[in-house]
Image (cartoon, rainbow, N blue to C red; front, side, top):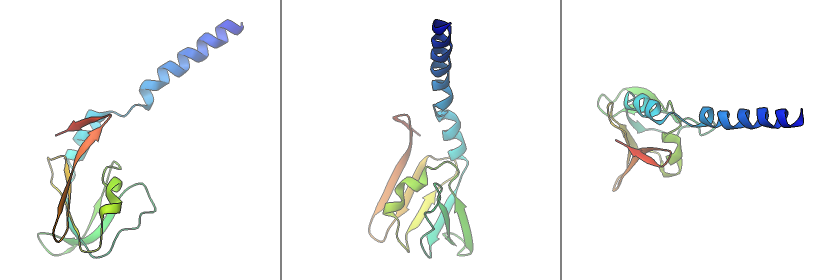
Length: 116
C-alpha cells in the first residue's frame, strides 16, 4: 500500500510540472496584440504585479490608460520616471522606455528564449 501511494504521488508531481510552465507562444501572441503609446504625467502605483499606466497618448495628447496584461512591463518599473514615454506597438514584442536622452528597449522573453 505504501508503494502505491508513493507511485501515485510521484505521478501527480511529475504531471503538475507541465501545468506550472508558462505557455510562451500564447503569452507572446497575447502581448503582440497590446499597444501603449503613453507619456507619464505621474508614475503608476506599483502595488500590483501589473503595470497600469495613466498619462497622455503620445499621438493625440488625450488622457489615456495602458494596462500590462501579462506582467511583462512591470519588470522595468525601476527604469520609469515621470515624463518618460512608453512605446509598445501592436504586432511587436519590444517594450521601450523613452527618456530625455536615452531609449531603453526590452524584448519579450519567456523560459530563456527571446521572442520577436
